[in-house]
Length: 182
Length: 142
View 1: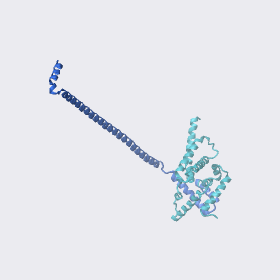
View 2: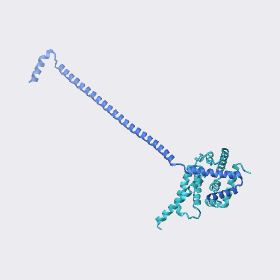
View 3: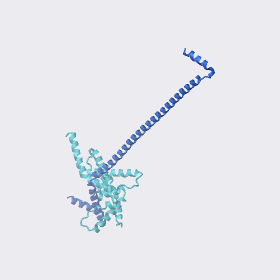
View 4: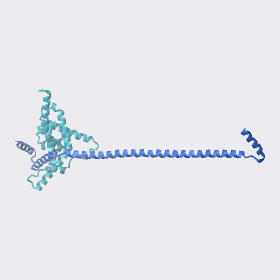
């Protein structure tokens, strides 16, 4: 196999990975930042970084876990850089909780049920906003991306025990937010 | 099969969260994020950026043209003003010189006149000395 052919195969393989995982990476970044444009920018950066390091990817974890790890680091870097800026107090382009809670499928529910559901989603968003960075990441990976604890541990670089602890605390806060603390 | 896998995952989530309201809220939250993300991911973005860009570009060009036209017309006006000033200064200088020449000319005429008057006056001699003057004139003619 010539070097050119190997390069072409790798490029095709990477294109397939992008096509398959881009929506999920975008979704994770959107739920983390609540900023449509920022999520788009970070997604592009994530795949650019992945493309640069594609030949070093050994397949020890799944491509999705590898990409998610890059995405988590990128959003972490982003928040860290924002903290360094003196205008950090100014609001970002994040959409407000009302707008973020509007995306429920109407289904066969009554208007009242839809209103209640929207209110619940808004309360979850509010609780998520109050979580620490790690708690939020773990919570979103578990309950939005539906990843296993082992996958979350690989993506975040934490042990499974630590992931469980963060998840438990995050759930406690969300429960409190929903008014279900006992 | 995917649906089965999803439902088993959801069941696992539910086993962690035993509260019914909590479970329902988490499911709704997930659906909401998925729907929002799908809508945002498929939105037509390039058009909005292009419109904003072209609008800015047009304003930039318009301002640039106004500035260029302003500086060009300013330059032309300044050049014209300097030319008019130079012409007026030259005309003033010429008039001054003409005036000076007229003055000098009239001064020369006055001097000639004075000289003629002087010679006429000097030629007038008392009657007693008339024969002597005629004698001098006769000597001069010789």
